[in-house]
Image 1 (tube, one colour):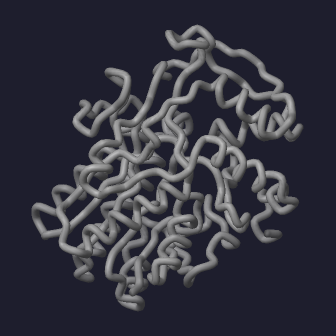
Image 2 (cartoon, one colour; image 1 turned 90 degrees about the vertical axis):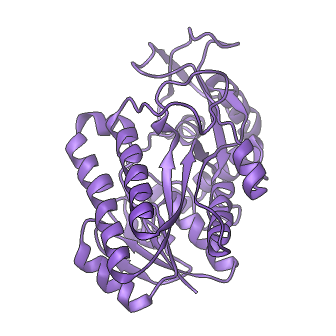
Length: 332
């Protein structure tokens, strides 16, 4: 059974492709390779194209006749979205619209969307349930919010069935070492902390040590990328079995401070993490932790990996010789 995976050459998309293949599906990767990597496409064919190219999307859909779409394609850097909002609206919103139009034309009715906790904006309370007000505070979060609305409207108009998965902080790498995190530039905390520990950058910058948290640093919810991939697989099976439309958080339900992550990296790697303390960044909340009861109750979904698992698999990936030359995608 073919499943179209937009952005399947990227970090989370490639891990989802492996999960699909193990479960007996064939992932058809649709990616323009601007941020994804050809070496990460290992479990099905690669079709190169941009998510805004309606003609190319239609060609691929007609060729493979996928039963469903997993939609990961898009731009993901919050800071970059503030500097280049037009690019984010074109790729993330217009691209998602092109995808929905192609699905309608080709009569594909099932989609699982890679959304984000950025749709919530500033958190109210210790954990964030799906009923939390939606008030994105940056263009990236707004593009995810708009796409969720477009999908819901398409469902109402055309009978599309969907699941929107609101990620918190995906991290880690596949334990077998074949795929892992390779962003350019890297903006995520754990690989940046590991880079400082391994001497590949001068230091890790901590933005804010005066938050109202136990150690003064901001608290975030980290989840292993393989747990994220399994959430997509479970949601897909739920929809294909006739289940109702879903929107749910994908996180661990546990918060860790920046200092706790640094301490864990030092303990696991046996290396000191050099740190430079910086002022808070505007708009960074003190605490962002998922309430994951809905996924537990409606899908029986549970995370399997701990913070130590995240750091150990990420460390192993970043210590691979090939991980040091990811700027040249052809060499991997």
